[in-house]
Length: 90
Image 1 (cartoon, rainbow, N blue to C red):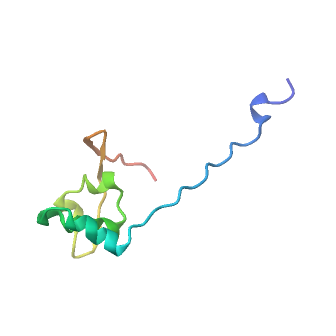
Image 2 (cartoon, helix red, strand yellow):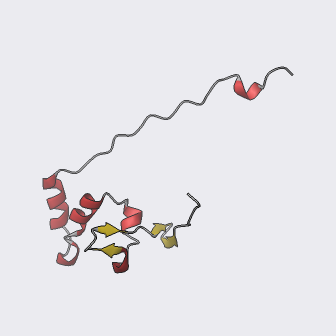
Image 3 (spheres, rainbow, N blue to C red):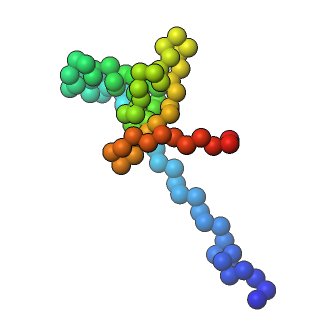
């Protein structure tokens, strides 16, 4: 065999990127209005931080440093359970 048959078709095409739909301010306010008062700030928090839902749902108070304006994402919710993020050498 002189050539690798797995290379004959060429490289796999990259899938097209999906557009991200951003909520408008009125839409965000409408979402907040549907929540109980305790949870009304959540849409603003989600929009301001850009956290994925599975990241935001696993946050604890100790993950938020208001003084430094820093959020540490240490866990996610996966399949309904909170999972610690693994550390990598990178």
